[in-house]
Length: 218
Image 1: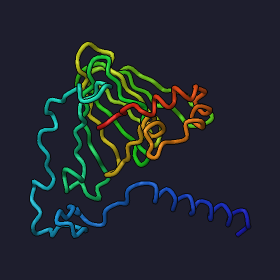
Image 2 (image 1 turned 30 degrees about the vertical axis):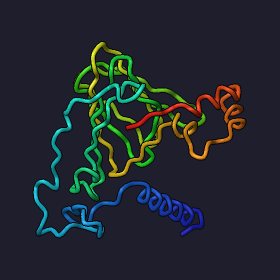
Image 3 (image 1 turned 45 degrees about the vertical axis):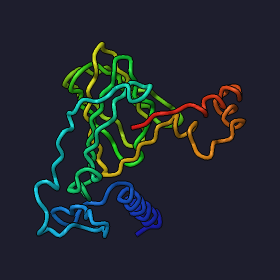
């Protein structure tokens, strides 16, 4: 076997290992219900019930005055609320956006997300990485589906006159939520304001004012 072929195979193996580490591992048994006793590991299968895989009330009314963005408190079906989700590599969400409300630019570092519009009209989009920063945007109506690729910054805003209701599914039990304004302007301890003023090409007074604001909360 030539040296080029050996190099290619080596790089392919390294790439496959990196890809396997980038996402949730596949389960090695039918299920591993999270042990709520604090001991960690899987719950004794003999004590598992259907309720370990169940969550009710995801359709409960949401208070869209919960924050200044007009987004109601997001409801989660995850391993934190449904222990049967453990090791299955999925999280489900339901969000309500008030008229003129927005979901701030954010990303999920460990998951792609597919959303389904149950009610309303919403404009969504995602931005590709450096150097193109291309913005793929689409107006969605009731019954529409859209996907945000893993790790990319994405956006959403309600264009209708009524609340918009969106369901999301992410292919990780811990997808991560990285809200861009919060990450930069609400960091603790604060990022140096002189640095940020140069990075964003804003005067330092504006940066310092922004750093005093309250930012998004789920």
